[in-house]
Length: 140
View 1 (cartoon, rainbow, N blue to C red):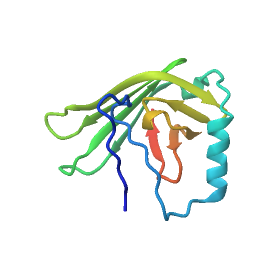
View 2 (cartoon, rainbow, N blue to C red; view 1 turned 90 degrees about the vertical axis):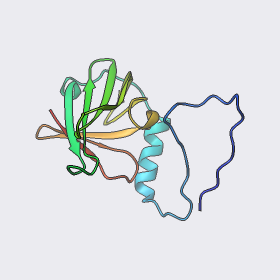
View 3 (cartoon, one colour; view 1 turned 180 degrees about the vertical axis):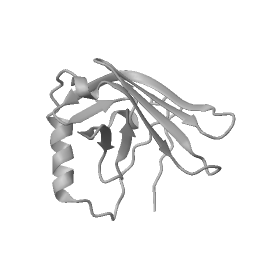
């Protein structure tokens, strides 16, 4: 069950961002503690060189809504581009915003409305994980 409340007509909110809490779901307490530390003790530092560049992934299956995801990271910003792989290959999302890194966590309003993501780099693959969602894996 989800409970929604109408926002006042003059309410200001981030377009495309929806925040909610799931009741009745047991989260891994160690993972919750780790993400809380990352959120509340976030100390921005320079974006590492190995994180900079263009990263790509494809998701979905042909004729079932498949998309190509492109994440471009430089020393101060991230651009998140999602393009349909179905003709006519429309751009579905194109966002750019500042990026911050703290240890092995990053955040940018281009990714999940600014939620903190854990990142890891292994064998040329960037893996982004937020909460207990399946990770997003991108290659250069």
